[in-house]
Each structure stands twice: as C-alpha cells, then as structure tokens.
Length: 359
Image (cartoon, rainbow, N blue to C red):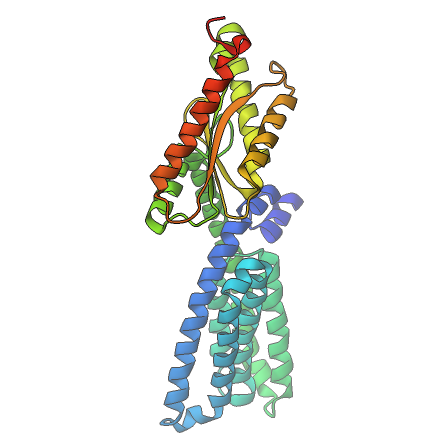
C-alpha cells in the first residue's frame, strides 16, 4: 500500500523507471501546452484591459491584468529555445504560471471583492492543475500553499466575515482539485507511456534494439525534403562472414554477431548521430555536422569489432563506406557513393585468400 501511494504521488501511478523513461515526452508536451496557454492568457487579459476602459467595475483590476500579460509574455519567451535546452525551465514556468493564476483568484476574492462569494479562486484552483502532467505531489503542494495564502489574505481584509463566508466554498474545491488532478495526471502519464512504447515498437529493431529501416527511411525522406546540410555524413556498413557463422556455428551465433555489430556501430557513431539496422547484416549511420573525420571513425569501428568478445563470437569485421556532404549534393548521390565505398571494402576483404568464401 505504501509503495502504491508513493508511485501515485511521485510518479503519477506508474513505476519510477517508467516515469523516467516517459519524462522527455511529458516535458515536451508540457512545454508546448504552456506556450499555448500563455498565449491564450495574454489574449484574454488584453481583452479584459480593453474592457476596463468601458466598464467601471473592471478599472480596479487593470493593473492585475497588465501584470499577468507581462509575466505570461516573459514565460512564453522562456518556453522557446531556453526551455528546449534546459527542460527543467518548463516546470519552473508551469508553477510560476499556476501560482500567478491562483494569486489572481486570491486577490479577486479577498482584497478586490471581499464582500462577494469567492468564485475566481475556486474555479482556477480546480481547472488550472488539469492543464499539465507532472508529479502529483508537487501540484498538490502548490494547491495547499495557495489555499494557505488565500486564508491569510482573507484574514487581512477589512471584512473578517470573508474568512468564514468562503471557507466552506474554497476548502472542498481544493480537496477535489487535488484528487482529480492526481487522477488525471496518472491517466495522462499512462497514455504517454503507452505512446512511447508504441513508438519504440514501431521504430526499433527487435533483435538489436537500435532504430529500424522504417525510421531510417523517414529520416532520409526528411533530408530529401529539407536538403542535406554541409558536413553531414552517411555510413553504410555490412558484416563480413555472417553466412559463414550461421552455417558453421548456428543462427544463435549469427544473432549474436548482428547484435555485436549494432553495439559497435552505436558505440562509435551514436554520439554523433543515429544508427539503423536495415536488412540482415546491413547497417546505416547518419551523422550530424561536426562529427570526426570518416576515416577516423571507420578505424574506431574496426577496432571495436576486433576487440569484441562474446559467448560465441570472438572478434569480427565489417565492410563500411562513409561519405561527407560538402553542400548541394543530391541525397541519393551521397547514399550511392557510400554504398559503392562499402562494396569496394567488401571486395577488398574477400580478395584475401583467408576470407574467400570458396576457400
């Protein structure tokens, strides 16, 4: 029971490992939602500022509207590239946004309209937490802090009856908000987890765990539409002797060899781009501009393969070709050239008597 409660409060009802795996997707979704909500808030508050020039009852709220507009504009800027580079900034903006709206409801229900039934604060307390997905414990703490702030402000007004008058209205809303927001965050977290799992199954090669041909084709289509930037490299690699291993030792050893090649490809090329398994013993790596020279990477790849020691395989080699874009080359020409270099390396490998298939 204790573990279940901990998972619900700290990890939205899923396990700690599942939450960490899903966190990048949740954070990016929160960032995009926050940018949309801040824009809607800015537009809404600007409308209220305009209305305050025609409605006398809104004049006293004009400075609050303006403050929300300025704060929302700053957060919208921070939720652009700064938040993409520093994901934690997204959550800072979320809780500043949440507390800003709660503060607006508190001020409306205490200092500006102390004689009226508090409506803005309970509505905001119930609605705002439903907009985001985070650890329920943090959102519940934000609700409790705002609830305490509300009662402190209600006590400070010139109308003591405000405290008692609205307590029966605010407290139930806060409890319902904590329960409902925790439940909704759990539902959203499970949905993100399912989406990530589906994406992994669709885009990942089941044997090796690296990206599959479908994912590679998508990336190539994107580059074909946008153009290949100068400095981007394409590597095509093919395992040497896979058929011989399958025939002499067995397919279990062949599977180990394919997985070993994927590990070496990912170890050497992974820091600079993405690796894909195409068919059988063929792999592709697409490297972003700024990667080391191709010959240096190929040497590291061969060394990694030669050093491999597994249950059935002790050292192997691959034939690989790598081409770097200089700018304005057609994508298909680069791929063909990398393929040609790979086959040239394969031919050189099998010209050696000890590697000849017929020996």
